[in-house]
Image: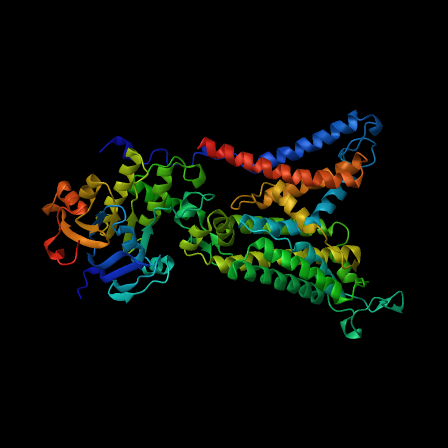
Length: 360
Length: 258
């Protein structure tokens, strides 16, 4: 027999042959975007040499403009938590359009169980339930909220896994229905005045703390557990996953349930931070979350992407929004450019895929 | 029925509407035996395999696997019963690397926690290396995703996956049809290791050299029927071609074959 079929060739973990992780590209894009804004701050005549992220006026102890940094990460944290779930959904070659509405419905319902009896010595003017639902322990509204997300996500999952309708349609239905629930719950009235305990969840920098904890948790889950492996496998080749004995339907229900619960947790933090819940809460959040994931390199064709990528995508998203405010551009431009960035991220991803395919 | 028989089909038949793709196939496979299924295109080879593995539902007939009658509702049931199949269309997840694919659906765990069980990457990698070493498959870097591999490397992974688990029966549907010379040799090596391990195999192939190189017995299909059942020692490639084209028919099949 020829030598060529003997032995194992270079069958080792040749580190030099390992692929350049896409996360590094995204990180460099983040740096590049910051550099562009810094340059514009120096070059544009009306900017008076301001810096986006650095402390040029000596207002803080460190070299950074801490106030703006804090706003950026605080802004992306809540939608970032939704994006963690959306990432898992997109990796499994699905899509979730319902997260924004789940935020609305969950915020309304949760807040009703988090109200305090007396506001400045007077009865709570926004009370939804009678005295029995006032000043409940913190765990009650949190569990109620997570349960809302659990139910909504599970309905999404069941529809997608067992009726085989496209995720786009199933979650579109949930998007409309959950918004309906949000409006129906208190007949459109806002729900306000939570207990002090409840207000703690989203106070100060707490949203960032939750985001970081959840990002680390789901990074580990996606990378080191069978749940993550099967999510990638389903997104990569659903038939192969099925043939390999993975219970694809059950796994999809689990993915969408987790995404629903993450959206619900974002709702808890948001309502706690704002000290109120309104029917319009979370509108367009689903698209921002999808944008964060896509900017972070999560492929809409499934199978590729990571939690780290999404976190970086969220930061890029935050820097761009903050950068536009910094450049004193109108919010209208922000929305236009936001749309363009999402499209550009997808085009870039496809271009990268084609190039990779040509190489092999 | 003897314990030496791993698979037996009796009167296995498949009609697609009016098309009789498979007619009364009686087939016996001994434990440890490697059998080739040959025949012209559309002769019923793949149809025959699809009825056994549950990819399609047979029109009539019986399949007896490992001593009991079976009626697989799908390929997964067949797999769980111990029949591993390498399909012409490869069932690999493109975005996962080699160990991930080989262990897909039967991962090794460090800690069992239901769906959040923690994977034992090191053990899976080591087992993959050992498995590939045994089969002499050359893959430059097993941590590469399948997407970045050539057709031959993919096929090798698909087959190595079959070979790394001790199955009761392996079925390969034209495993080397799209491969180059070197890659074909690697696949054939894997088949030899299966033989050495005493694992039975049904090999569908058009390649006569390969068939005579690898198997013990050759079954010829013609127009949906078995028309010959020959021991390798008692035949030669010209003879097989005569059976395939219809110039000859095995004496025991004279009644039925056309």
